[in-house]
Image (cartoon, rainbow, N blue to C red; front, side, top):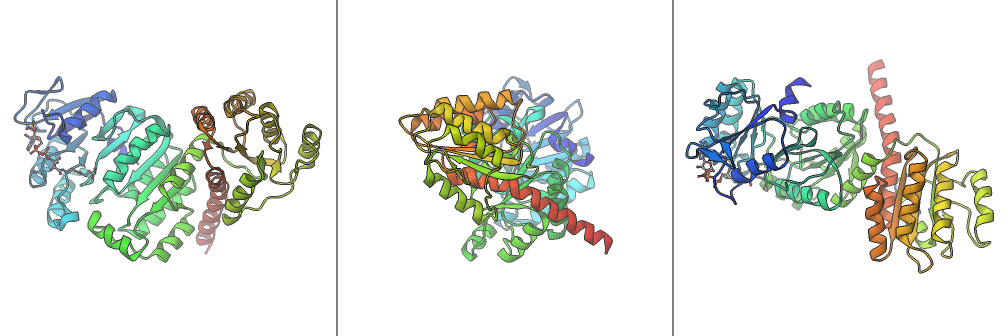
Length: 466
Ligand code: ACO
């Protein structure tokens, strides 16, 4: 979708309301553009300044000598219409309006005026009432959030600004690499559907996660979502599901939270994976961004603790996934290596007396076994094993396999060393979690996505034939 290109890959960015004062949003945006090593040209715009952060400042967008693709607007609301008019005349293609004080406080008129002026010049509008946009492939960080986001393949679209900024910081700590983070706020023009239509073809984005309060054009969203899920997984956290939550949504971004059942049907029909918490949504996104696609075959759990296996089995069952007896060759391979009281059903319980090497060997055997389509590895820290050795061993095995050929999620449950091991695995792009339910839920999403996508494909085929 060519029209959206300047939003993600602008060749130049003008920041209108670029401030000389640290602590102001207009200062932070310019600083982030510089710190992220944005590859295009940066033009601070401020009639009172000659230079900002070492860059020449211009009094207006129209006075900038070169072409301007994107204007980031950080001036108070009452000045925004005239800034848009000036940027439109200059030929800017997209306005990213950070400023608050529009529809969310009852000033829909001012918001409409801004969009009307932008449309006159064929300019698209992101926002208002947002924290900006990140697109790591071109090192664009036009936000007042953290400057050091990690490059990766998760796309994150958020209707909430403050929560979005906070989660931006969380992705850094959690080492979740992102391709893009888009704050959409009031969605006066560009909405989730426009972004999905662009990101479905974006090679840098493997999965998209949306924090959604409400959609304005249900039909447009549905079409975009189903076209997206045919290509890539789409995870949604729907906020405002209760009557009280819906009321909070109305005063937050001015959206209508809508009927829970309607959204639920819409999500099912379009193949959207609905997460119930933010943590779950990011857990799933991590798994999708690291893992190869599930190609069928049975899921095998390998655990050294019965309880962890039971908890994971429950989560899988709640998500419609039942476990079958592991393939016989795998059972035959493992039996002589395990104590007589080990269970070789599914979950395969290698017992608490297994060594670190023995545990890694069992997981590796499951991964190599034909007929096994996915592996869920659960480990409870004991005094006879070292979780860091286990992480190291698993990383080595996966490297020797030439990378993961089938989905693997891991939970290492225990103390400090287990937490370190989780981090080691995530750094090696093997999705790992500190709790069995989280690893199981991520695996369920990976498996269920394939089924959800098939349902969408069949439904569209039927519609096409009718
Ligand atoms: N063109 C260019 N520059 C201008 C113009 C103009 N027409 N008018 C003013 N400026 C300059 C100012 O001189 C100032 O620069 P200076 O500090 O060097 O003097 C700069 O632009 C900013 O203008 P201020 O009047 O100082 O505005 P301030 O920075 O206080 O506020 C802002 C502007 C941030 C846009 C504010 O109105 C606003 O909307 N804040 C909320 C933003 C927000 O939270 N958005 C949602 C994000 S998500 C979340 O909730 C985290």
